[in-house]
Image (cartoon, rainbow, N blue to C red; front, side):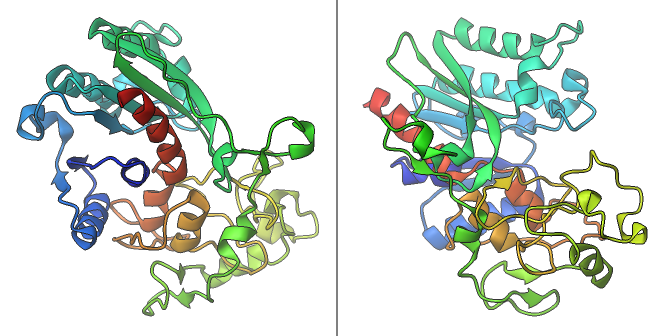
Amino acid sequence: MDIGVENAGYHNLASIEFDHNAADTLRFNADRKKNGTKIYEADIRTLDPLTIAEPGIDLLHGGPPCQAFSLIGKRNSLFDERGMLLFEMIRFARALRPRALLLEQVKGLLSAPNEKGERGGVFKRFMHELEQLGYCVKWTVLCAADYGVPQLRERVFIVATPGTNGFSFPPPTHVESPEDTPLLPLKRYVGAGKVIGDLPKPVLKGNAPTFPNHVDVTPDRDRERIHPVAEGGFLAGTLTAPLTLRCNLTKKDTTKYRRLHRLEPSLTLRCGEIFFHPTEDRYLTPREYMRIHGYPDSHILCGPIRSRSGTVKNLDQHRLVANSVPPPLAQAIAEQLKKVLL
């Protein structure tokens, strides 16, 4: 989100990040840009907002951890301490009184139960607390592909500004079938192949990359699983593949061992599954993940690259991307906010 906001003309005063590899990535890129952004590697609950910025800042933006609300997780909501981090945005807003607030979350937030088990209770409480601070709150679900990002990623975005305002979320610039909207000058969705097709061949893990973060971590056994999967297909639906390769996969496993199609947007990039390259028998590299997410090539990731069967303590490079907001989408919203602020 920092990149999108900066591209819209804002200056990020500070970033707060608990994960070490994510904080290292923020520091590395801030140092290269020499933009003066201060990086706090800390538990946000231990920080005093007034030691970070003065009241009256233009924008407070963030994406609190989503695991407590994700539809593919345990959905422990507020009984997961990560779920309570959502309300750190309220604490910071109360102290800093920003002219605008921007928050991103998974769609599961809309139905997450509160402590009493009331469906949607967490979202209602969050909206109510913002309104109690005097903000006019608007929210919607946006798909990244509608804004030129080659990824069918849907997320909830919440925008709050003091009092009544004329803010409206940015209109889409892309659509799946432009011929269905002849009166609107919309472009066709961007396919994954368009953004990764010009990258050089990646190096194998253990070698110095010739292009930043462009490293192939695919184990040999997984290349065997990848080979029979057709472009745009998935292993569980590849009936020509031996049962020894399909193992315990079922028809419902449509995202596991899935190969992207060059002419179509990717499914949502996730932490647990790395998609296959459209034409090569390997997983996507972190750089290809970044291209599909809308990152500039000037942005460098820090930290380990996890093999498909390997584990790391902190976020690896693929998960750093999957947990983040596509920069072009953040930019589109920040530009709309700028119109109101000016």
